[in-house]
Structure formats: C-alpha cells, structure tokens
Image 1 (cartoon, rainbow, N blue to C red):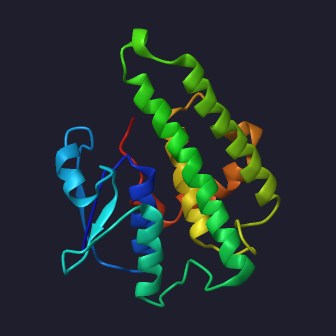
Image 2: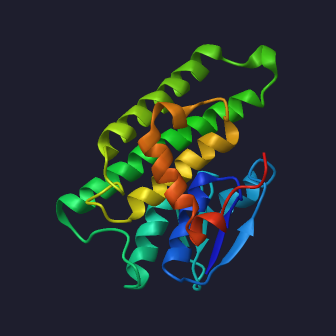
Length: 203
C-alpha cells in the first residue's frame, strides 16, 4: 500500500496516526498538492489528498473512508466501535474535527491569494466555523480523559490532528486558554509516538 498526501495535511496525518497505532506498514509519499493537481486527479477525481493506493492499484479516498478500511484491516487496537451509539459518537467527533480542519485549510488557501482578491467576509465565515467547533468540542469533552466513553479512539485522533493544524497555521488563535480541557487532551495526544512522529514541519 502507498499513502499519498502532504506532511502538513491534517487529514493525511489522521491516516498516518491510525496506521501507527495499528502497526500497519505503508509507504508514505508526500507531495505538493498545488503543484500536483493533475497527478492527484488521476487517482482522486476531486484532486484531493490523502488517497490510499492498494496493492491491486485500487484507490481509496477520502480520509474517513481510508481510516475505516484500515481499522477493519487488522483487529490490533480497534479505533472505531463496531456499532451502536459509541460508533455514532466517534463518527460525529470525526465529522466535527474534520470540518474544523477544512475551514482552517480554506482560510489558509485564501491567505495565499493577492490581498486585493481576498474575501474578508468569506474568511470570517470560516473563522466562525472554527470558533463554533472549538466550543462544541470543549462542551462535548467536558472532564472526560478522551472523547468517547473515556477510551482512546479515532475521535481523539481526528480532534488531535485538527487542533494541531489550527495551532500550526494560526498560532494567534488562543484556543488553549479558552478551552483548557482541549489543551490537556492535545498535550496527552502529543506525547504519543504516533502523534510525535507525524507532527507537521516547522511553520
């Protein structure tokens, strides 16, 4: 198998953390997405990363599909509950975290446009999504050690990658002070080898 993504992508990082936690060996190819759109579109018509090339050349995308596949590939350290409310809760956390990371990524892309072409109202709308997601995450987490039923799961991985991306790209967003329970979770996750080994490069 080969995973294609970028070192800065929170979605690729989510997949890489899952692979590390489940002891799955996989080649990782880091690409510059902006410069490799045509190549990427050959594997994912949407032109997005990450995508996973299986041994038979079948391709899986997006990150939510990939992590589901990987979690079912081996019973080692299951990260997604099989069914019921716990499974639904994990997937809701993942959707919330991915949505926040997506909003942050869109702001990052807008900031790379010439200043005269930037849409401040659109950026503010994306920022409001980040703010709302952080508040919702903090409220849902409460005093729990992990996101769902006090157990480490894909929910924590998705949240950790999203929080890491926001801190990396937007250090001025002081979510740690506003939401100390999220900061404590992020610190706990950062201490895991799977997170330390997949941290994005210096900004």
